[in-house]
Every structure is written in C-alpha cells, then in structure tokens.
Amino acid sequence: MRWQVHSEKSLYRDPWLDVRVADVELPDGRHLDHRLLRTAPGAGAVVTDGHDRVLLIWRHRFITDSWGWEIPLGQVDEGEQPRDAAAREVEEETGWRPGPLRPLMSIQPSSGISDSLHHVYRAGSATHIGPPSDPWEAERVEWVHLSRVRKLVDNGEIVCATSISALLYVLVEDLPDGAVPKDQDGYDPARTYALPDDLPELF
Image 1 (cartoon, rainbow, N blue to C red):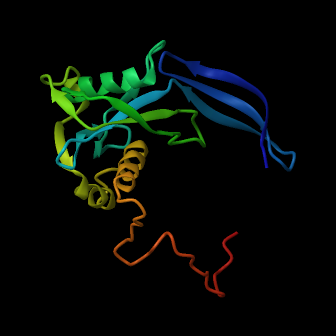
Image 2 (cartoon, rainbow, N blue to C red):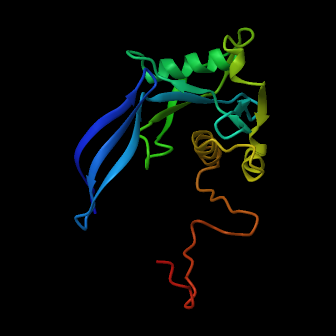
C-alpha cells in the first residue's frame, strides 16, 4: 500500500536540514500532515587494519545525552563525492588517513521521519598523520578489536544505527565462505523455524 503525497512545504530551513510538512493520503482515504526532515547525504567509513581491529571514536551525543562508539561519519558537502567525504571525515575526526576505500553499504537510518542517506565505505589500512583536526568530535580515538563489537552492541556502547549496521555487516562479510553465524542460544538464521500454534495475535 503506497501513501500518496499531495503537497509538501518547508517549515524551517538552514544549511543542514529542511523541516517540512507533507499532505499525505493514506490508503483508506484519510489525510494527515506528516512532518519530515530532508538533509544532505552523509558518508563515513569502517577502517580496519591487519590485526582485526577497527578505528572507532568514543563520543557524547548531547541530543540523547549518551556516550557510544561510532565509525567516523559526517555530511557530504555540496559538490563533493561521497567517497571523498568519507576519507575527509575519517581524517578530520581521527587523525588517520584511510587507505583505498571501497563501497560497503548505503543506509537510511530513520526513513520514517527523514530522507537521510549514509554512504559507508571500507578501508583495510590507514596512516596516522597527526591529531584530529576536529578534536571536539570525540573524547577518544581507538583501534577496537572486531571480536568486541557484538559485546559493545549488547552493552549499549554502540547505539548509532549506521555504525551498528556497518560493523555487523563487516563481521558477516569477513566470515569464511559458506559460514553461517549462530548466536549463543544456538539460533541459526539459515534454518526454518516453525511458529507455535498458540502464538497470540499481535494486530
């Protein structure tokens, strides 16, 4: 079922975002005023080294008043290519210059409210060039072993949707061909599981 958009207008706009309201018609004919955010795309990178470590920043997000590990990520400037923006953001936020970048994934982390699109790349090496040029971005910059990623997610130390998606994608990407990860309870995503007959109706 596709929602029909009859009009859209800006409520507030600045160089970083555009707050808009859309007249949306639902499949049953009802109309609603739906708020949305339109933003420039973002770009970042998962940078790994030859020791199964990933370059992360530990930072505070004042909006949620929370601390967490994140991959370097930022806005793509007008006229800039996403790959170039990803390399720039890594260097500015960490002080490390990434090696050759290849596309990893693209993600819309909050498509119910925003058209924000994040382009994520992967580099297998980096060269330290000095302290971060944007030192206010992070409390710490560290190489974190990939084996710690899942535990950091479980503990709520990685909560950024783009960072979680990209890091877990890398973990799966690095599995041997044909390997299927199983969680600690034995769940196997390659197996078909039958639902119980007494499953309650949810909707």
